Image 1 (spheres, rainbow, N blue to C red):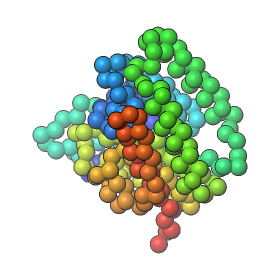
Image 2 (spheres, helix red, strand yellow; image 1 turned 60 degrees about the horizontal axis):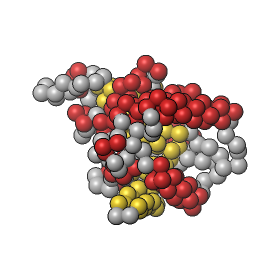
Image 3 (cartoon, rainbow, N blue to C red; image 1 turned 45 degrees about the vertical axis):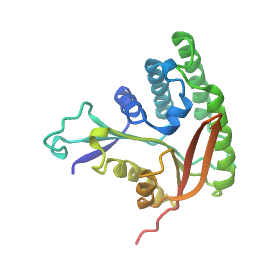
Image 4 (cartoon, one colour; image 1 turned 90 degrees about the vertical axis):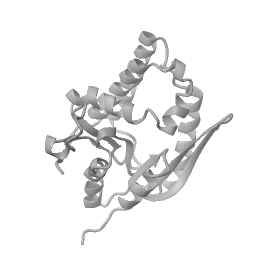
Length: 236
């Protein structure tokens, strides 16, 4: 199957955003944090994601896209986008070292862009800020408990696969673009998934192990995130 993996470029951002939005439309975490669907603004969400992708590129984060050649597609399928999947990782950050000047500056630039979007779109597009900070606090607490390697972890921030290309190995190739690099460097990897089945089974086949869970509860609504770590594999 001819699935090609490429580093994300600025020209790919628009289609990458569209791929993520479609893939996460039914994601439990996404629906929990954007719980008032009537207030959800697709354009505001797209602008925010595009800014985050630009942030990742500026920080030289390992972000990859998958593209399928025509021969890789079933005869009865015609994709609506060139991008078959997206996988965005954060590079390892040693606990004993401060973030680089570049990352520090890009954090402020991203915050400023989000402020401008709030003004332009009249808000955060339906994002439940209280739930967002609840999740961030629990995530940080969990990381302090389970991130035991002082060198840091390759952190899979987002992985999304075009629905028309699922079951064709796209996700595996996107993940392996970084896990193979991590193996060469002897570095661990980390991810969180808000879907239990079949995601956990898929990630386990890629070498990840379930190590903890993050459960966010707000009233009658709850969202669970499964935390998985992959230790580096030694070459045969």
